[in-house]
Amino acid sequence: TTNANGLGRLVAELDGAADTLFLRVQQRGADLRPFLHDLTLNKVGVEASIAVAAYDRNGVHIAQPVIDWATDDSGVLEVSRPGVVRALRAGTSTVRVSADGLSVLIRVVVRQVPARIQVVAPIGPIPLTGSQTLGTTVFDSNGHEIDAPAISWTVSDPAIGQVVGDQFLPRLPGRTFLNAVASPASITLPVQVVGLAVSVNGIRLTAPGPVAPNGKPVISNGLIRLQIPGLADQQAGMLAEILNGPRWLPFTSTSYGDYVYVASSVQTGPTGIELLEISDTIIAIRYDFGNHQVAFDHLTAPFDYPFSRTVWLRAGDHGYFTQVTIHHPPPETRDFEHELGFGGLFGPATIRFGNAATLRTDTLSSTVRIQPEATIPDAADFWLDTNPLQRVLVPLPGNELISPVFGSNAGSVYIHQVHSRDYGAYLFVGPRTSVVTARSVCAYAWAHAPFPLPPISAAELAACGPN
Image (cartoon, rainbow, N blue to C red; front, side, top):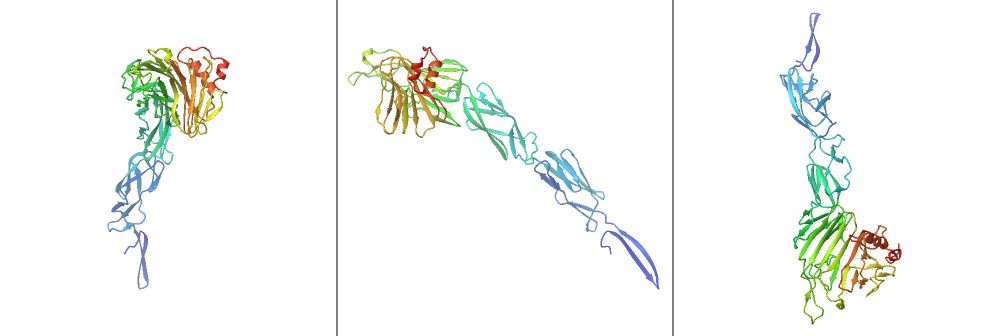
């Protein structure tokens, strides 16, 4: 009876005589059995063992069979040593295991599981009229690049833009985030779109012309976003927001917008809206309020007091210009009041008016009116205690007053015009951490107004506050 492969010896003896017979026992394979028929490797560069068992015709296991190993695609898989394969790239290869004329096939799938997504080049500010190729490289956990990975893109704020293929296509100025997913890996990228845009219901306007009065256009340069709030007593206000980090923050009141008073509260909406100018550098839009009425006193029937309000926004600016034009002024003797500024901003605040003393809204309760000479501008700084923004209001020439108004828990800063004539201002906002003075904002407003202004003198600049 044979017990193992090898060389054996039989010795026969009879009456002192002996003879020897040498026998070689060699099992021949009759059956090859792989431990698995399919194998998946999840990254390039990894090695894995492939085991098979050989049996002779009696079903006895062959301990050390002589086996040949081969792959049908050496670009995907290689036999690094007997019984061990190494993944070279993603794909499918079949390993043929042969012994004693027998063979079995084992299917090996090499797939790369994404572990990291890398941006090929930084994504800088994207012009509104341009596009951005989203170049990315995906790697598995061994650091091997994955060919043609499936990447899906989402945009946190679709109003800013969309991704088509590998292109980001801007829609409106602003900031948003792109999220790229090659499951299970992902990466989030900040994106900023720069430029000027006017949109109505998400559709950009590209040429001057009339806008439907109920269209509610949104004006943006990517830093500031403007729109009329359409509230009962502030139909002519302008809800202004500034992009502070990833979020839009209101810098005029969300209840009123910037405060606009045209001889009375404006309780009728625009009768006409016209986009006057749109370019890469400036947007101008006029709102007409043809149905506005004012009563001189409680004994006088309301009479028509039509006006228009024009807003200018420049590219890259942190403020905007606004002008109120009275269409049919009543007699000057009536001296209607007109006001415009940062109204309805609640909470303890600090107000610095020109070169006057700094005022605290939580310690004083009064109205401060300072009347400079006719053409001397002034400016007011306004800081809410718990707010990250600094606000500066600069009157345009012809306005007689700036009035910081505050109570125990609310503050307002606005220009005050007591004659029934045109009036306007520049409203600036920026992070409180920046070094911006009211005087520098005043100088900017006079130098960059969208209509001619006389040169500002050193004395006039000094009236805007300290450097």
